[in-house]
Image 1: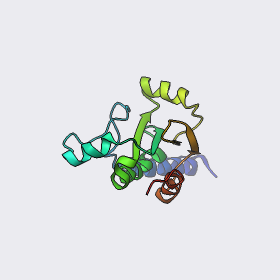
Image 2: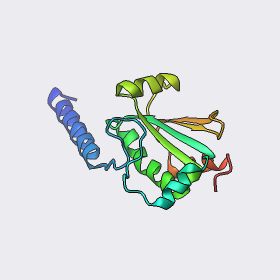
Image 3: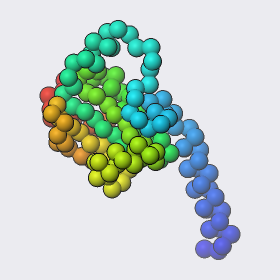
Length: 146
């Protein structure tokens, strides 16, 4: 392959990657990567759900600048909405100072990584890479989430 066709191929890959990156909506991602929940105007019923002890803490460690990590954002939001007080969803952006500390705490090798903690805070499952919602739900159900 000639130099020109390699350049064209590389530019095409960059263009497609940029398009995908810019077209993925990240409504759940925290700008500072500190795991805070997005909606400031939650209903009082949601507060009651939050006071109950969750059965599982679903920790997503990634970055808002990583395409597979961004693909996990809608899954995290759906899990939080569907399972409410049974599952606490936490996001740590490893490309922030606090996120780097969190990545070290969980011994992260690649992003995204999903870490599932039981009600006592002990890790019972871990996955590296993109993880489809059906698989996330299966892991949540291991701890009695309904």
